[in-house]
Amino acid sequence: MGNPLVVFVPGLGLDELEWERVRARLDRDSVVVVLPTMGQPAPRGLDLRVEAQAALLARRLPRNAPLILVAHSASCPIAADLASRSGDVVGLVLVGPVTDPAAASWPRLLVQWARTAVREPWWQLPALFRQWARTGPGSMIRGMNAVRPFRTDHALRSVQAPVAIVRGERDQIAAKEWSATVQSASGGHLSTVRGAAHMVPTTHPDAVVDAAHHVLAAVTAAERLRDDEPQLPI
Image 1 (spheres, helix red, strand yellow):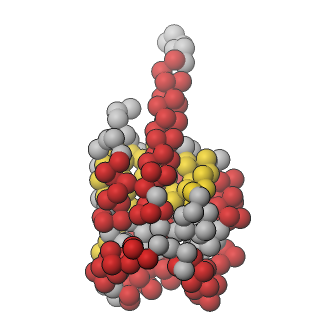
Image 2 (cartoon, rainbow, N blue to C red):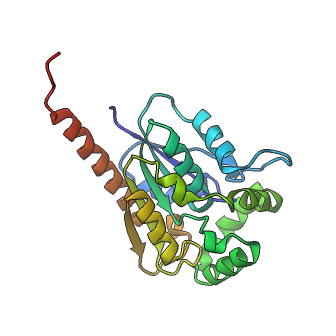
């Protein structure tokens, strides 16, 4: 296996700017892949279900190359679905993963969002508003509506690659109990970022870099173990 490429996928309504501070701290090559509602507007009628978005993400990635996917919020179920079906994904970092079944309804989602938004630093707002305006509120609503019923935890049960989960201490969207469920389903490593809310990639980029390094180390260790296995004579 060659050196894995780190692929960042923005969250709902966000684009390449979301990952700027993380990529500046990461000591390896990386790319950002945008999707409809996640960096691009989504025309009406476009299939925005997680499975369709995962298929589109696969088409936009290098083929037959080892990949570590780093996703945030609504892109986490997409990354998890692709990782469950693609041998090219050798590692997964999920930041603030969503689709908690206890918060699948719009009223509950809005309550979680409001409780989390008030805990975010206000200095982020100009950059967030620019990104949301480019995506468009209609695209964002349709995107979230398509993601809500998906079970990220179920998809993760089929993922064989190392997984790291990152959540903010003050995040009510990726709540503590739900994040523990995601950890249990994936067998991954869960870290909670003190003082952070949902926008960890922007506010605490070093925490995401640490998680990526954790996954990279696990991938390297697994590869060395395979290389050290005795070869049976043919």
